[in-house]
Image: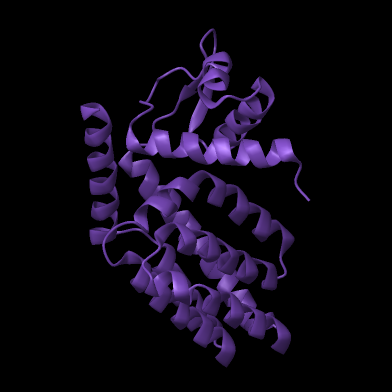
Length: 226
């Protein structure tokens, strides 16, 4: 089980992620441990751990003589990262469709169904967490340790952007429908359809990418007006 310090650092990481995405913490802004510890009323240890997680996610970088600062991921870089993530997760779905035992298929179906209430209630935050569990289940069923590690590393970097894009209008319902296509293909043992459905689900292109950028711009404007 995670330690209490670990739980605190996870919560702090989510709070700081949100501040970075909304523009409350601007690109290039310094993240001083003492200041953050005072703001959140905690010791510097969970702050330090949260910053390390954000560095691993690429949202924070350490600069010589400046320490931790908010990183900036441009639109082109985001497109590239989501394109790679789509291919990696597509590969996971393909392998899961080939290798899943009946009990594993049942668990994937159960993980998908667990998302239903959040999707029907349009609860983006609850859906996000259940969505993560669904994707982890498919990665695990692929039974390729190296692929799992690569997906996990890139997911950490894209986590806040995947969470944010779920807040765009109608996205949670569409995401749930896309999950159904992936699960159905895995249940049929159809690797290529499973891979294609997963790639389409993860890739952020066209209107979806425009919606994501619009959400980022709106949150930055809201933060600037405060």
